[in-house]
Image 1 (cartoon, rainbow, N blue to C red):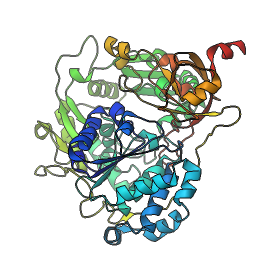
Image 2 (image 1 turned 90 degrees about the vertical axis):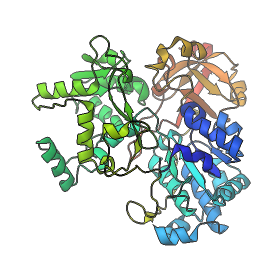
Image 3 (image 1 turned 30 degrees about the vertical axis):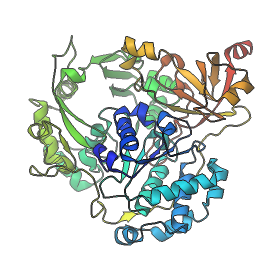
Image 4 (image 1 turned 90 degrees about the horizontal axis):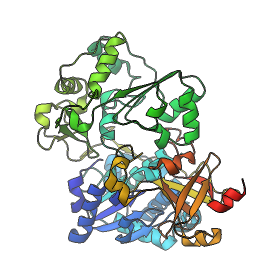
Length: 533
């Protein structure tokens, strides 16, 4: 997030795109609801589904999934044509405006309506409300990133914020909400194939030499593979061994049948986790890790806040903290890695990572610190880009709309999109072990509009088979207008109805994120599907 959670209640407008915030990020959802109820904040939700947050929105736009660039360009078309853009901000702090302006000219509200299904007048009303706000915040999540055009979508969001001067000030900004606990911290710490800690490039010789000197070893200048690329490489026999920590690709990755084949093709699979997940069941070796309550360390949340985690109990059984397992394994493999404590590790992080430069366990007590925090006297940074962008001028990127990789056709006439629910988290490795949560939501469902359900002869509570070109699952039908006509929705938490058996592994060419949010399926009553066998 460029800005902070506490700034939500100070905004005049909240624009929430592709985020079921009250279910996937309930704490931030509460802040949004408070802003609307107590502070008169206007709420715009852009989401194909009628979520809980959409029900309290001043404007709810329901685009066809996968058309984000088109309607974002349409919003910018209206803002520019109606002279609502922030000319001073554009002149002083950006570059590339002319090219952007030329590109969005053809994305008139009427043209966008043809692509996205959003009524032209509603698009105009949305553009005016956002552009005329003194302070407007944009929030987005995987609803716009998990596409083959995910990078284009995020750049378009940044274009919209810069166009209206809603960056670099309190209660403004571009605010992605992270999908898992400490995923921000994992990225900050270099758990990406192209960077070391603090997003320092592995291809930069001066940066690489800094880490080589600190770690007393040579380091590769080559960029590695992303998760889905690794699965493809394992399937092709190019990767022989894999070490999976706290991740469950057998439910979370797209095209799970392909994932299973890839993992079974490995010579050696190690899984380090606190439970025997679906992925761990395939492992040659399982290393028992300690839970968050059994170890010291830090977690970085979605607003860049680094917070101290303190051990409440000793690790149970033979489990150990992840850092101890990694150090022991590294030493046994020939590279001695030894630390006395997580506090010592944090000191090394600060030494090598400019955005964490002023942090230590001592300073993180209490509310923690938001990066960048470059030195020990720095209080942390509440919001980013005040006065200037990190590259100097903010760069507009003119982007054309591209359709999703796979669209409905005669054989597979419905569009499947996936997401989360309040009562279960990610692949359910933790939450499905809770009796109370299972009682509240015991099984996966396929959410289908009443119009589609009637045409298919389905009623609420029926069992149906959902099939794509990659696999099929059986799930209970939930008939609801939350999903638009022509679109069905499933969560991916349930192994018994694993939505990712259906999804495509097509990737965004830049970020290499898979297109979880759009694929073509057909839905049939279970008895009809069984009769065809």
